[in-house]
Amino acid sequence: MSASREWNSAAYARLSDPQFGWGRVIVQSLQLRGDEFVLDAGCGAGRVTSELLERLPRGRVVALDLSHNMVREARLALASRFGPHVCYLQADLQAVPLAGAVDGIFSTATFHWVKDHDALFQSLYAALRPGGWLVAQCGGGPNLKRLRERTEALMRLPAYASYFEDWKAPWKYPEPEETSARLKRTGFTNVKSWLEESPVRLPDAQTFYDFEQNVTLHRHLAAITDVSARHEFLTEITRQFTADESPWMLDYWRLNIRATKPA
Image (cartoon, rainbow, N blue to C red; front, side):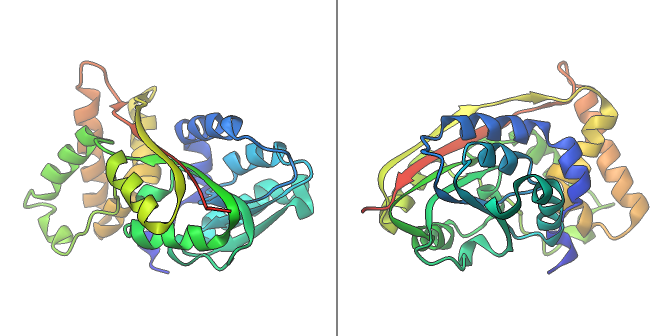
């Protein structure tokens, strides 16, 4: 796997309180018996997976992530506590190797990193048993608009433009209407999709710098091969957010997804 597709999983585990908070709310919203077999589609460092496992005392979870580092981090966090109730899988969500296997699919803070949502939903549909459910939340609509605009402006400057000549944005932030239509085309029923504004204010400039370095802009920074230029790029983004009237505020929007595979 390309290094730019990997994560600093230990840093993510330390810095991802916003993602953990959103994920915990979604876990608590699940209607569970407690014995289901559930796919955590994008388990990350395993923090939210732990919350999911707490709600499945007689069930099992597949902790899946594309990142080798994240799967390893999740295993370190979960194995001693949950034992055989969780298994670990490094795989692409566009090609989940679990045909008709799971009762439900849970995912938070992941789908916006997948560029082909047609392939994503077809893969997830195939992994579900008849009557299985999909409950997910990811970035959507105007998510991080201010950060994206400032980053794109900086990327065009002569000091950085050469690093981004073949750049393709790593995110996909769809609108709820297109997501609902895509889910229905795939075959899902009982489809619901809606946006929720969820701004996050980080406590200080250093936390903002670390958060962007490891959570949001790590793929941008991987494209900048000069270490000093990489630091200057991130320092300038941090400076701009520090100068805001409400400093270190990130304009997060969450896209909520609910759907069912027909029985």
